[in-house]
Image 1 (cartoon, rainbow, N blue to C red):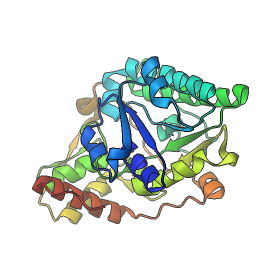
Image 2 (image 1 turned 90 degrees about the vertical axis):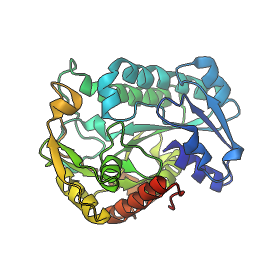
Image 3 (image 1 turned 180 degrees about the vertical axis):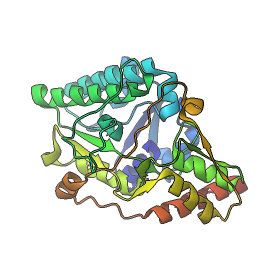
Image 4 (image 1 turned 180 degrees about the horizontal axis):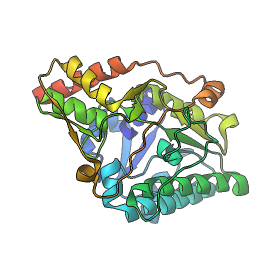
Length: 317
C-alpha cells in the first residue's frame, strides 16, 4: 500500500518521504516505483519518537499506514500489534499537531469484528470475542487508534480523517502473512494445492489498490471527512471457496483445493469472521469513490504479476 501511495503522490507532483522499519515491507517495493529516486526513505519505527520527528519535518500531509500486516503476525505478536496502533498513533498525532500537518489514518474492517449485519456502515456496532484471545488485538488496537485520532481533531483541531480499509490487494503484496488472494495465486501458479482455512463459506470483498489509493488522497483533502471514519472497499462479495475455484480457473492450474482447520493455521481458539461487506455510501457522497476493477480483472492481474515474478520479468499493472 505504501509503495503504491508513494507512486500516486509522485505522479501528482508531490514530494514524498517514507518511514518504514522494513519488518514486513522491502526496499524492492519502493524501487519498483517510477521516480523512486525522488522518494526520501527513513529507515526506522513509528515508535521511535526522534526518527518519526525527523521523517515528518517539513511535511504538510501525513499518511499513517504503520501497522501489523496480516492475521499471522497479529496472532503471533499481539503486544507489538497494540503498541504500534496506540503509541505509534499518539506520536504521529502529537507531531502533526506540532507541525500543523493534516493526517490520514488507515484503520480496518476488523473494527467491526463479528458483526454480521452487512453491509457494514461506519456507525455499526463492534462485536468482538474475548479480549483474552490474541486474535482480537488488532481490532482493539485499531479502535484505540481511531479514538486517539478523533480526540486530536475534537480537542486540538488536527485535520485528521480515518479510512477503514476492507481487503485491498495488488502488486507487491505477499501472502506469507495470511493475505488470502495473493497466497492462492502464488500457490496456483506454482502448481501447489490451494489451502482454504475452515470450510470456505466465509465471505470477503476484494478491492484493487489502484482504486483505493486515489481515495486515500481524496479523503485527506476532504473537509467534510474531518474527524470521521470512512469505509473504503469493494462490495462484490465472494466466498473463500469460490475465490479459490476462480483462481484455479484463471491460472488453468491443475492445483487441488484442500481445507485446513483454523486451529492448525492460527492456533487454538481462533475465531473467524463469517462475512465482511462494506457500505461505501459515505465515501461515494464525500469523494465520489467507486471501485472500478472487477474481481476477475484483479485475479488476472495478480496472476500475470506472479508469473512475471517467477520468470524474472517485472509485472505489468
